[in-house]
Length: 245
Ligand code: PXP
Image (cartoon, rainbow, N blue to C red; front, side, top):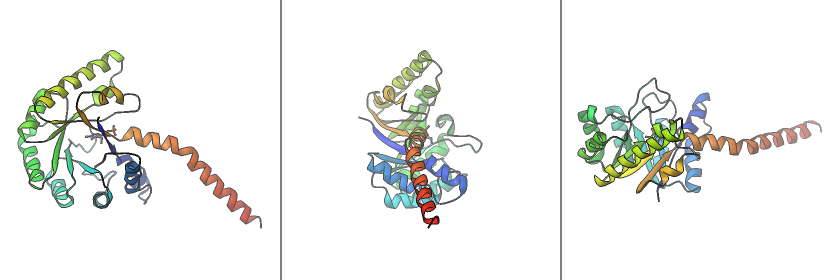
């Protein structure tokens, strides 16, 4: 059965909208763990738009399951990872302008840069996964760098506009998954997975880890909203009564 990696970046996105202290992704990580998350995933972006250095430092102290740090294959962030020592690092492409991670890491086209980063992480005992499109040449390149795992990008599957197009993308993920497994790589999947589209991905043979963020945070807002409003309303009612004395 695939394990669940809960990506808590967008809890930090809400906090950063006000540059305040709530909601704290560290609290969200604890709740995710209590609810059964197998992995806590955070992406420390170069522009620090959501997760901050402090979050990763505290999470390393508090998370009891696997901590998976998503990061660009850049030297400054690699040095940070070497200081923090998460159990797993997932290397992702990163562009400043993008809304979220668009497309997989081009390992083939950036072999030397990625190797430098992977070698440093491996030397520190960190398990390295590369986030790539489901393409054989990218899987082969990942294998050639000695990585233990590969995270296949499910974005095209998630964005497919028709059942036929979605099936085509699923078949590509199945083929690439088989190819990666035969190469001895552990199989992770992520990006754009939702409550509606997750099950066929969870059913892929040997799917080991699914990393899911936006949809879980979006659902948490919706399932928690009514209670949050009720609690605020109750406080206002209680406060009004005090004012009437
Ligand atoms: N996996 C990787 C490598 C990612 O970069 C992201 C997005 O940060 C995710 C999984 C989670 O994607 P989503 O937020 O769409 O669930």
